[in-house]
Image (cartoon, one colour):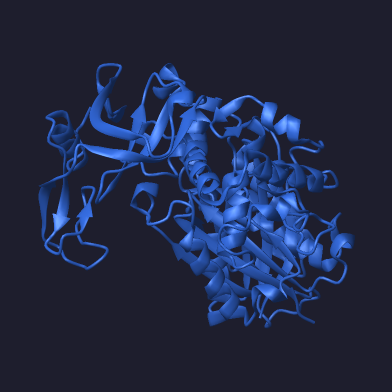
Length: 382
Length: 125
């Protein structure tokens, strides 16, 4: 059993003057302090980071962040665009299960507001195919806009239907003291916002965020008071360029990741009480819920609109505010989802009372236009 | 700008008015480079001519871009179905109202700042 022994998060937001090493150090320090282990027990460090080379001129992030955390242990950075830190979590889970290690520090960090919006936009675009997509002028929001446009045409979804994803997640973030945006928005705010790339305006896109996340994972060999375990892990892959895919409106990498995670945990979508998915754009939450098995293909756009994924609905999705309102420090997002689920399930999250009987959570973390996807199942195991 | 073998060869063919992609010996078409066919595993490829026209599968009109595309906003990025293969290209100087899924387009090349070549789609006349 892989236990989540401790969790740490920085505030998510615009912190252009705080370096990645300091951001990660803050999150790691919190995770270590509220875990049952001492820093000297940590045997390996797994880091998610996407664009340190571009924004800080800093590659080789592993040792830098180990030092900043005050931990002397082998440290490696994992990069899968926006799925970087879930990929890091997955590697730690697998190594703990083999018995190779018993204590891991896992997390991620991203600093993006120290560069211009144009530079950050260029950095994010590197999650798409540089030859065949970015060379044609495609931005990262543009790539998801291409998926959204086709989805809307194919299934009759409106821009207003999709806007409900953003409205819901902004409402969920109101209670989250770490969230980048804590303001309620309405349909008019969404559709009247400045256009980024049709059919997306500003409020249909996640923001540019600085922040870090960290967790301490332990095996059963370590005495642990936490009842929260990662019981399933899965990863999928797809062609990078949208032009190569059979269906632009589906994300088979997420189907693969979810199927593997559910099988691993011996769970089904019907067992899941609470969900965190990768809503980098409104359409992304819809596609994630469909691919992960919570909604039929072409039906997911109704979920937020009809209140089903609202905190008072049947299947609360993104109770922390999602990437949309909580913020999306790219390399930190996957591990931050595990932090959210852990806190929701152990009763220490500001929205825990909305799902007080919840036992099982599901996380979906996507890289690029879901050319990579990593999913995890987190549950209460006494 | 250093050429990218395969990709720039493709743009040369488009610019010459005879667009080509690569095809494995079992007839699966790919954008180059591709070393092994991901459909059948074949590793024997040859260039083959494709249609110069196709239709829009999906599009987005981009208002926020990074350099150098930020100089020409708004512009559209389009995925088009060229019969056996899909391609992603730019439609510069676009007015949102003219674009629709299914619109027929032809292939060409757009020069951005005289030195950056971009695959271009034009509405079929």
